[in-house]
Amino acid sequence: MTPSQHSHRLVAIASGKGGVGKTWFAITLAHALAMQRAKILLLDGDLGLANADILLGVMPKLDLGHVLSGAHPATVIVKIAGGFDLLPGRSGSGALANLNAATLDKLSDILSDIKLGYDTVLLDCGAGVDQAAQLMVEMADTLLLVITEDPSSLTDAYAVLKLLLIARSPLQLDVRVIVNMAGSVAAGLRAYETLAGAASGFLNFRPALGGIIRRDERVRDAIRRQSLLLSRTPQSIAGQDVEQIASKLLVRRSEEVAF
Ligand SMILES: Nc1ncnc2c1ncn2[C@@H]1O[C@H](COP(=O)(O)OP(=O)(O)OP(=O)(O)O)[C@@H](O)[C@H]1O
Ligand SMILES: [Mg+2]
Image (cartoon, rainbow, N blue to C red; front, side, top):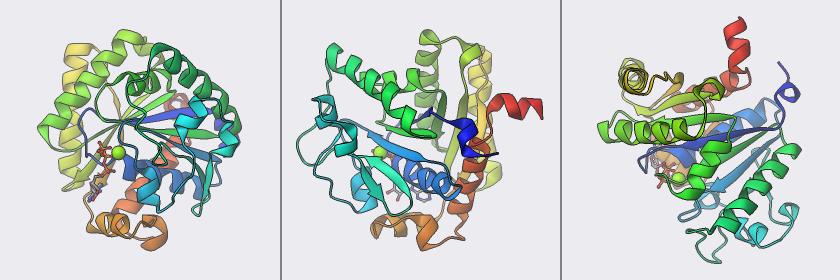
């Protein structure tokens, strides 16, 4: 399966609850996909509290706000040592939260245009369901919904799913649940089943399992050192879990069903 067969895909990484590991996961997934020779852009879409730049240890001069004000994306995108591109969400120029309708339209145009230059654009969405996060989730070809074993992360993720199903037909949706910081694979599976069972019972839609990422102290260590986990400790448990998710992501759901 070559990356070019999966060109121009928008993948939103979202959660209801904050702090479940979206940004770290988005960065590590971008790296894992780039290692499989896919052309990847990570767009920091957490407009209020963007921080992918910090986790990556870069200090961009321009950000998405400049693109929304008319700058060409190529002047804003920075190259990351892991072999992928970053469109930063902030450069210290001020918060981008509370977008008006015209800016949201502009953001939608930017996403449609920018994905043409990449195999996959990963969108690191802010926690919750602000308008920008909702737009990105609704525009995405694939939604990776990140939860933990924490019950409040399950109820918040359920709310994201419920809102999405108001906007989009379930038949068009490729939603995959990622359980992060799982104590074990079995515990991760239980958390997934709780969410998938509630969604299928009450929303008549059963999201797929995208993968389980186990809790791993090396994640904190990599973040503290502003380094990429797959470079720093290639054999870490969490890193291997993300690599598996990346491999699955390169196969579209329709093809998985066909096998
Ligand atoms: N698999 C893991 N094992 C151990 N710790 C983890 C794991 N994944 C994430 N973390 C920890 O969770 C913290 C929060 O991660 P991150 O900033 O990526 O969350 P987030 O969902 O993007 O938060 P926010 O909602 O504020 O944007 C990290 O600092 C990291 O220490
Ligand atoms: Mg984040």
